[in-house]
Image (cartoon, rainbow, N blue to C red):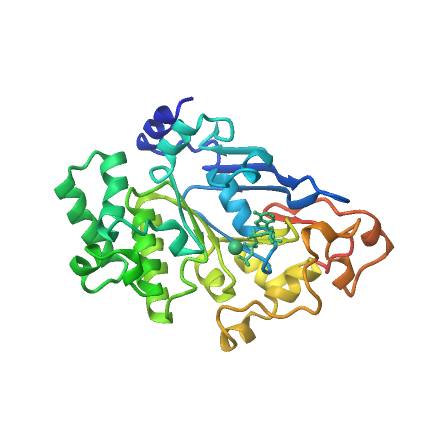
Length: 340
Ligand SMILES: Nc1ncnc2c1ncn2[C@@H]1O[C@H](COP(=O)(O)OP(=O)(O)OP(=O)(O)O)[C@@H](O)[C@H]1O
Ligand SMILES: [Mg+2]
């Protein structure tokens, strides 16, 4: 199916049989000596319409690379090294010609980037950047798109949208830039929004306001959201399901309540069982688990978490556990899990 047909199908409304986003066996292995860098190491998950999947994991676990692979926004040479399937509404997008992919980007799927400065164009006013996708994808005229841009800036909590719309990004504070980027990402009301640390730079009030806005967008349009964040309180309040990544893999995935109440993987349990304490600690920090994530070139042969794991048995050091379904909506990759 062509990109235009995919867009048309999305406009026609949801087709319920397939998940909106389906990722299978996603890999990003960089050949190097003595061992390939397995930056993403076989990631698979589904995301339904109207659903928010939280993606958590320590720094370097591969969250951003997973997001950029799905968006097909990696630069060479990494872009040429991605393997696996990504289907959007049943349409395989990894093999689409770049022209068709860029017709979907910003319109059917869009992304809020972890680094606002790298994604905003420094030589274009903020208003113009928000208006551009609305003109390109929705066919709005310049004046209508400009007023839509200001409306979006107001929606993301910017009190003086006219001034901000006329400004270049470097004149804005970090928080303002972050909000401008969110406005750009939602300008075309995408079916899939990937939000990579969308509110980290913002104060708590604005953060709540923006998450509420994303929730409204989701309820109104049935959008699917992949929410990447270090803030477990944000996940607890805004995600339906959580996937925990460690060293390039998903190690456990379940509905939010089930995972916070009873994660079975020792790493996930360490991370999520401590949520009441996190809310009082630095809100952007994951709880500390002794040791560090191994660098991609230094992963042990077995489970990558085994060297830090109090429950590790000899099999854990020898063989990496596969991610298997342990209950209807629960997946787990562990040889020595806690009881469910
Ligand atoms: N262009 C690149 N070339 C080689 N390695 C890379 C490249 N980009 C990222 N990496 C490595 O890939 C791993 C995963 O990076 P990624 O940015 O996806 O992590 P992350 O989970 O998003 O972390 P954070 O929470 O800090 O944002 C890291 O070890 C990182 O150093
Ligand atoms: Mg990241």
